[in-house]
Image 1: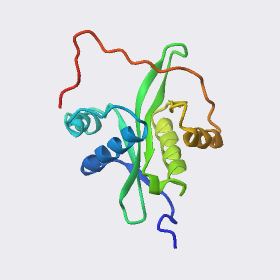
Image 2: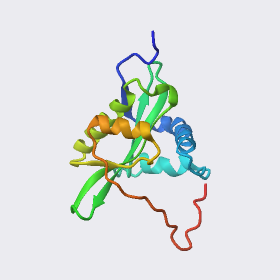
Image 3: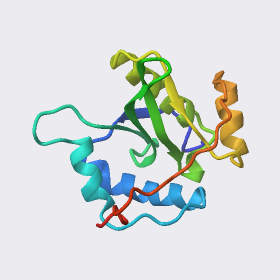
Length: 166
């Protein structure tokens, strides 16, 4: 029996998930051929995901689990404002599944959970991007019925900001 044959399990991340989520982030960074992230990622993400002051989180992470309960993927989202629409939307910054977890329904389960999160937050739309070379992701999103919007993403460091420190 295939160990991934099961009902996909997706849930909100908990504080004890953070070390594994950071491992997955590093896998995702390597997969997307991006520069390594500076140290201290868990320390920077923790207060945003799990604020101690009782305020709502600044971002949400949903995790996907295999049948053994191992975290094998995540979707990270935040609330953003679209000026042209004068409305907020849910921005899915990242969706990632470990290579062995792909093709078993977890990606669709993560996307369904992201859509539910948007609805829970009173948001009518989810937006995201994927690299132009990631044909597998593009096929997956197209199968879901998502519409692509051609744009190029830019990054520009703020003057004097320097690199993040860990």
